[in-house]
Length: 96
View: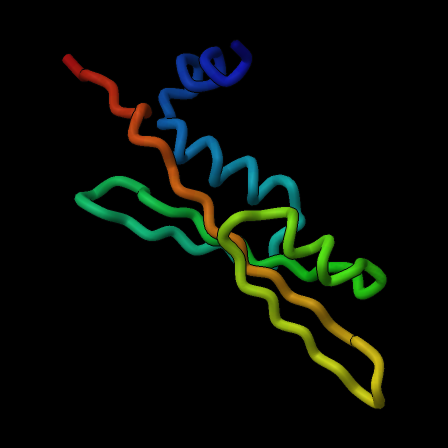
């Protein structure tokens, strides 16, 4: 119900609201939008993960993701994740 109110009050599409929420969360190093026919189709977010997490646990968190693991002197020093989120086409509204 809250998302519906946000959309009505702001005049933004659901995909635009998702992008703004990702930006405001400050978790992401970068955010990439893939646009088809003038509409956001996929949102990709790059985030730096805590190196203490188990790799298998990271793999279970998202269905579509890329993990980059950097190792130095036998220890993991950096884990970056790019995850993809398909935007539902239900955000189309009629304008008068």
